[in-house]
Length: 394
Ligand code: PLP
Image 1: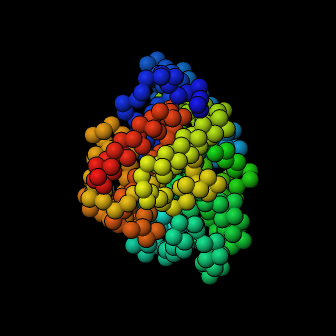
Image 2: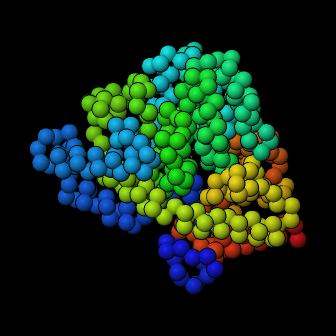
């Protein structure tokens, strides 16, 4: 039996399971404890010069130092934002406009926070946008990236570390090397890997990278942007001088405190959680393969070395049930996300599965796990799903 200090020890069989941790994770109680004093007692505005303000300013600067230390950056390179979406937008709009970049490269598999930002810049005529080719499992073609950047030196490149739907891990070390060769500005969306993998900014050749607290048991509505020292980027939000004029607006103080605490906890237990959650994922793969005929896995999500250990994207055989898959799981108390390659019914269309050319007739479910899940919950979820399939195939 796998065990983690964070998973509930109860022996009672579960009657519900939450497997949508790539959408958001439950708040760690220790994180809440760290945040509460900044909701109750320490209410000052961090921009005020009196004692109330200074107390809160110190908490923000400590949080910045903690985060910088954990990703091996300097505190001045960290700016707090409202989350991953804002940080992705800031990297794209800020650097493209300030540096006058005329060409950007991304992939059709990116999160909409990146795709829609770059497509808006393309629509306004500010950039030309190219997409890196990928294979049918979503592996990016590095030779094509090299070719695109060879033809358009000094581009903006945005390629994520791990895909939020299929879990594919991109080799951001190699992408950074290619970008460096062609003098490109490299932004990587690390929303799904921050707090799950050690990221060392002295090793990675990235100019921008982002984190979002609610993906690693922190609060929602807060994240950060890393911007390498010396890289210019104009603000996305204008107003006061907060965040050294990079991001105006009174800071989300308790959010920032919670973000730093959550990243600290995640970083100190990373290897244990990795092993534990990978064990849950392996169990899902084994049990699903045994229980459901013709089950398959989208992207690289079933390949340990090539995918995020928290995400498994399951491809289910064609069935009349697929339209109502998420709904039926929900009424059986299993919370997951889906998204087949078609855009109708309960399975909202997935641009990622569509780009991979997945069969729209098959169902798709993303199980995403955290340190709070248990083996018994995996068994419960698989049993609910298998029972639904048995009914339609009987
Ligand atoms: N990028 C990726 C890869 C994500 O998975 C998400 C959230 O789902 C985001 C960006 C957006 O982050 P946030 O919810 O903090 O705005």
